[in-house]
Image 1 (cartoon, one colour):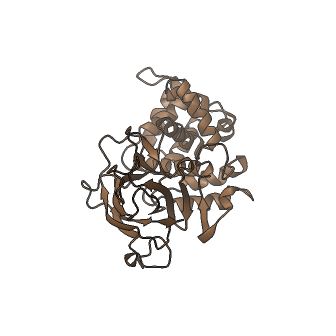
Image 2 (tube, helix red, strand yellow):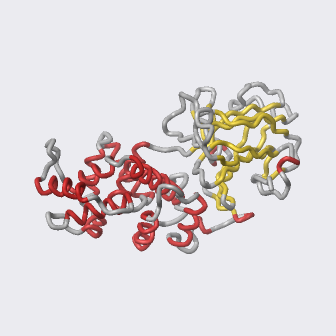
Image 3 (cartoon, one colour):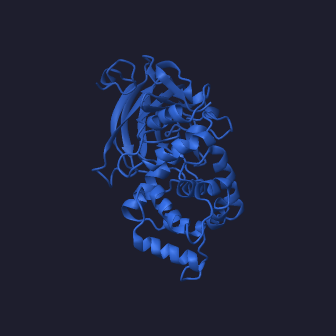
Length: 371
């Protein structure tokens, strides 16, 4: 009990380890009833484990997401702040943060002196991210008196407000939503990169990209020729893929009539792509939450293929895998989305080929996510 970093020693008996319950919300001061998730911190860390260093962690606490935080950073648990007393003036210290894999994050960000948000858990900064059991572990370095020491003074104390976040890209999310709605699956990493570039080159006009989606080989294989006779099946397939249920007859009649007439009442063209976009963007309440959950899961699925976006895939997602992945995404519900560990396990069992990096495990069963 109470061994958040898994080194076999109760955390309260280690001055360089702290496990703290955080509220699972970016704004803990405003949502005091949010569910709890434990965050564990190790100072003087060696791959997450205590080295018995002189580092003493104090004042570990959760803070609200800053008002000026970039929209690209989710900050699911706001900010984490702590003081690390090292007793070594000007020393560089290794730290590790653990968070339950139910909270998807892909970096540990801090602001530099120019107020730019920098991911310290990236390889270029000497950090790393691994999946260790059902927890994500993020390793990073801080220097007493360095640019990421909040007090800016080499005094043997490192003061640190930072954030565990999933960095998002608005255009990527739009493309990912199209994959979920039209292809009923998460994006493959190459396809996501391609269509995101296409969307950017078209000034973010998602309708143009949607029309391109509707004319691909995958679309034809999935839906065939969408005409007056088959459009009802197409509409129901959209609803089933997005909302896990058939469409209400009123909705079917509305979209079917628009498609047969070639236009909505407001004059907009009614094509298979525009029907798909309207169904996707018109979701409200529980349907909107379900799409949000599927988007979160799809985003993590695609990220796990190529976490650092360098083209070196941890797992190859290709045509023979699509049906299993499509069925898996369909079963995601609005209440209990899978954790990062669950998604990784699904990829290993249903997507990865023998020898793919995602199948390679290190000490304590860890899976390295960045190289």
